Amino acid sequence: MKKYNVAVVGATGMVGSKFLEVLTEKNLPVENYYLFASSKSAGKEIDFMGKKHVVIELTEENVKKQPVDIALFSAGGGTSAKFAPVFAAHGAVVIDNSSQWRMDKNVPLVVPEVNPQDIAWHNGIIANPNCSTIQAMVALKPLYDKYGIKRIVYSTYQAVSGAGVAGYNDLLEGLKAFVAGKEYKTQKFPYQIANNCLPHIDVFSDGGYTKEEIKMMNETKKILGDNSIKVTATTVRVPVLNSHSESINVEFNSPCTLEGIYEAFRGQKGLVIMDDVANNVYPMPILATGHDEVYVGRIRLDDTVESGCNIWCVADNIRKGAASNAVQIAEYMINEAPQLIHGAK
Image (cartoon, rainbow, N blue to C red; front, side):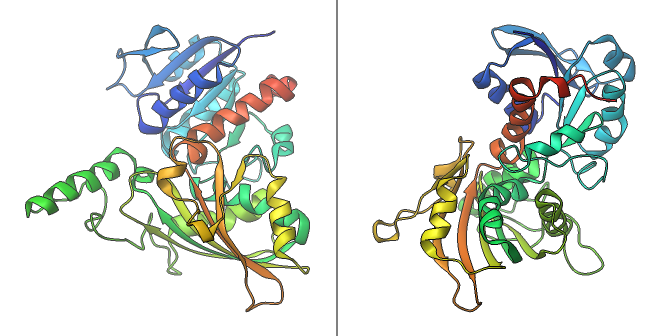
């Protein structure tokens, strides 16, 4: 079996570290791993896959030195804008976790369980969707295929890990301060997140929606390949360490039944039904954390529309919502379409 050379860009960050964890679990046919980060992390040693790897400073010269086939990026939009084309120009397929390339018409936006066929038209860069969009797509794709979707209303309850280490610390340190009766000045959020909810993820647009909400609205249409779907969203940061939860209201184009919805869900790869309300069984962040599956529950028809339903959807935002989805794209290309790895222009 052919072996590949894989780069991890942003290897010392929260998602970068999760890349390494997921790659260890997958044990893909990789000859060499190259771990890149900024100058402040360059030279650091990371124990990974049974050996010590020295972190390489991310510079154009250093990129050119390494024979990379696949590059997993989680280093921010500005870094992706500058360095993804450099990797692609030197023969690598970049799978980028930032928002930089998601809505570029020449870049596929991929969830492997939903639209793997879009990988085929990459030009050296593949975009990983927003974390909250990824889990919603795994749940909605089988319903879209079966009934067609007219309208989606997203209400999200997003964990602080989605805001990186600073967001994580704001909750932990904020709770400590609250218990001690002290003040804590937040590093990431505009207000305390401990014992609070913030209807504010990313910056506000002129229309009053946040960038996070706009991402979900636009990415849903691109991934499903249907601009006719009406999508609206409200995204909220909640005092949960990890795993995002979503209430999703869906209106269909054709008549649905509850059993038909369950049947569609049962056939969807990567989706787990957790729905037994008589015994208080439903998805929760503490159950999803550490897993790659998307969990759905509280499945019920919406009798306020001609055909529709409500579902509750939970997934680990750092694994499935970021690192695992990107690694799954790489895994798909290696196992199902190796010709696409060296097909970059």
